[in-house]
Amino acid sequence: MKELKPLNGKTIILGVSGGIAAYKACDLASGLRQMGASVHVVLTSNAKEFVSPLTFQTLTRNPVHCEQFEALGEWRPEHIELAQKADLLLVAPATANVIAKLATGICDDLLTTIVMASRAKIMLAPAMNPNMFEHPATQHNLNILENRYRYEIIPPDFGEVACGDFGQGKMASLDVILTSITSMMFTGPMLSGRHILVTGGGTREAIDPVRFIGNRSSGKMGIAMADAAYARGADVTLVSTVGVERPYPVILVETAQDMQEAVEGEFDSCDALVMTAAVSDFRPLAFSAHKIKKTESEDIVLELTKNPDILDLLGRMKQNDQVIIGFAAESESVMVHAAEKLARKNLDAIVGNDITVPDIGFGSDDNAVVILTADGGKENLPRMPKRAIAEHLCDLLDELFQAKNAVAVSK
Image 1 (cartoon, rainbow, N blue to C red):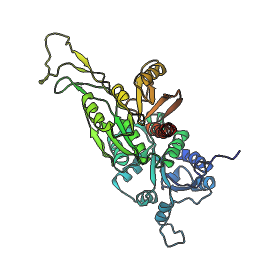
Image 2: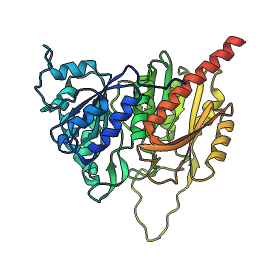
Image 3: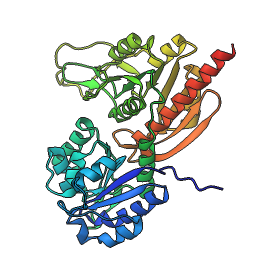
Image 4: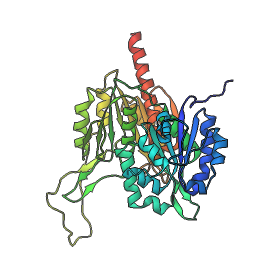
């Protein structure tokens, strides 16, 4: 049987910066080469303190690049030569220092210069002390790189780091990084010509001018889904409670009723709706125009009324050629509740996840889900970045469109 090499013919630049996780880049370089990629390693001067160039040269069978002004024996400068040939530029580990340089446009060594000169897809796998990762400056820089410059960030894992501290800072595992790479490399225009409507975030239902009922949804899944569909060539509209800068339209809403109006306004023209938003089931029956003051009583009675069920409504309205994918965040019996919603709301597929599992789901960059389809299909996805889950859903959308087209042709 012929060995599968999904990255065959691809050129990947692996940038290694100076952190203890640099030793993991050796396995990464080897794994990329085994998957068929031509790997060219660029080491920062600090990275050479952890791993020698000879190690990477042996693993990749390509020269290792370290110096800014090293000559190739040709007229084209080295950083331009490498930048032009790359299909993907991966920095792993990406230290806080390198992240800060890239966010501010500093290119004072070979690696940062190559990143600035490249038009290839760029991925970063941060690795550092948890306190450094959580520092506002690092989070600000990552936000710039992800949202403004459109770099793909592979979030670090939780666990004990080399210095003994515990938290989020360990470089993502080899499997997660390789999965993220293959997902990103093979995002083609399979959804070209399709209008994909995505919802994201958690709605807020006002009690008074300062208080509201809400939930813990960060909107990250919706953004990841919209980004993935856009990368596949789709015409994307994101209806979200979280404002983001994107090359596609983003309709900012707050309440469930706001979201209903926005989604209904776009639904007739869309080919698919992916409803990742966590819509509040209830809202206060009455809104207080003034801040509710404390009283002598220890209790306050807040009357609630049901919000419209947007998915249920649109499931009844959808045309035969439209696709609807819903989400079910459950605290128990995930499969049972997800399957019930799938049938009751006339969905084509539903994504269920257990919100009681720590460190994933709401607010996290990762999730673990089960995907159920109306034809009885089931797929379990272990913990992975939400963008990787979004890529799976894009594949599913393509399959669902093809199935609907086949049915239409047969009639």
